[in-house]
Amino acid sequence: MQVRVEVEGGSCIATIFNNGIATVMWLDDVKVDPSRWRQGVGTALMEAAERLTEVYRVDCIELVVNTENTAAKGLYAKAGFKPTKKEHYRKILKQLEVRNNATILSDMD
Ligand SMILES: CC(C)(COP(=O)(O)OP(=O)(O)OC[C@H]1O[C@@H](n2cnc3c(N)ncnc32)[C@H](O)[C@@H]1OP(=O)(O)O)[C@@H](O)C(=O)NCCC(=O)NCCS
Image 1 (cartoon, rainbow, N blue to C red):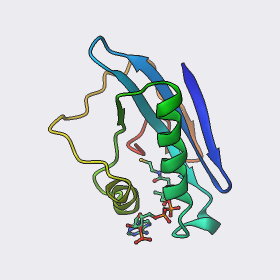
Image 2: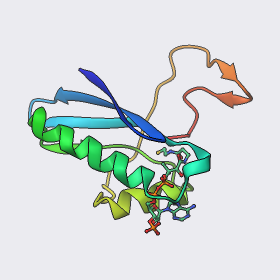
Image 3: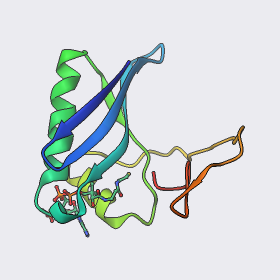
């Protein structure tokens, strides 16, 4: 199932599923309004997502982040996330759509 997590000034999408071993909350599209950056909104968003884990009995939260995204990496570290040993793989099946010069499915994550 998918839930949109929102706080004032920020939002993300939480996808909750069971992978046979654990119930996982996968976070995507984490974003804060640029006018509100560095004011604790991202942290509040991570806390809101974490509160949902109790409702859905989630065992762990996962996400991917661009290695160059210093702000996001700082946010996740502050929220208690640790890097894993996994590499992120992707097989593209459809031609990518280009919107505002940004490629959908680019390495924003
Ligand atoms: C990443 C993002 C969500 C952070 O949101 P935010 O509201 O600014 O985060 P917070 O104010 O709660 O900051 C939490 C911590 O993140 C780190 N951080 C945030 N912005 C930072 C920056 N520009 N440079 C370095 N560290 C930063 C800091 O450790 C900060 O803690 P501190 O303020 O006590 O030092 C926001 O920058 C954003 O929307 N970026 C564009 C979209 C994006 O990259 N999303 C992530 C996809 S994985």
